[in-house]
Amino acid sequence: MSSIREFKADINSLCDNVQNECYVELMFGVSNEIELVWSIMVRCEKLKVETLHKINSKEPKKLSKKQRREHYKKLVDDFYSQTIELIEDLNSIIP
Image 1 (tube, rainbow, N blue to C red):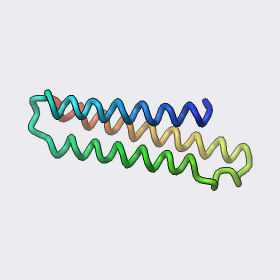
Image 2: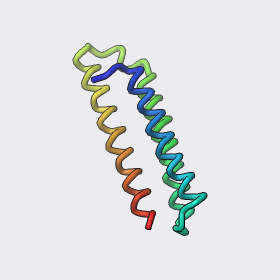
Image 3: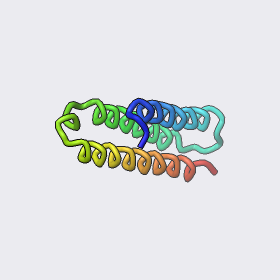
Image 4: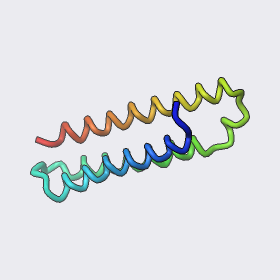
């Protein structure tokens, strides 16, 4: 697993990319699913805030090294799977 700093940078860049794609779809897209695009943007921002909050919490520091590694691995896996779900939702809207 990469460092926590790199994971935070990945969170910010992936969420920014998803939100940028949503803005592009809102501005130049041909679909009329504006509310769905906005809901994807809101879900993405919520995912970003929640994941960063979980990373910055003091709870994992009380765990052993192995448990911390498992905790962060689970966070990484959950974040990436939810990000892929957001991208798939956005792609399903685009004709």
